[in-house]
Image (cartoon, rainbow, N blue to C red):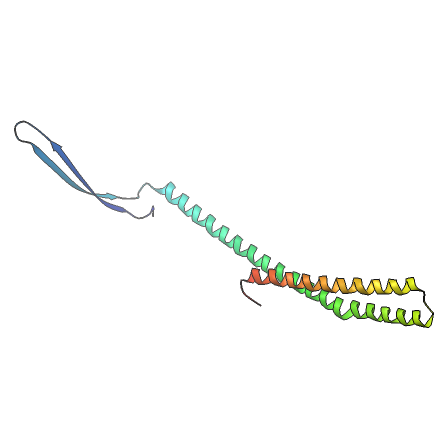
Length: 149
């Protein structure tokens, strides 16, 4: 805006009572402001524009970084959930079944069987927590992406 000439119109009126007849003076003027000496203002406007562009680029980079971070967290949570459901939980279930069978056959005492059952319930709880973490990470990723996945 500081680089373009400004054109305006000024209108004025003056009502004075003079002796003997009252006079009414009107004036109309056209004003043109040329920006010949607005160098500092123009330089400041350009630097403010450049600063705004840099801030915009920084914000875009930060948003991309947050989106990539949310995606990485979602993938990690998904892998943890798969590991819990496909690896840890079946192994704990098998250990609990074997300990129960060993207890029935007399090869294991009650504390060993209860410890195996406790490990099974801990594995089930960890699987539920991993599923919840995966769902939470998915919702964060969907929020960061701005759409349903």
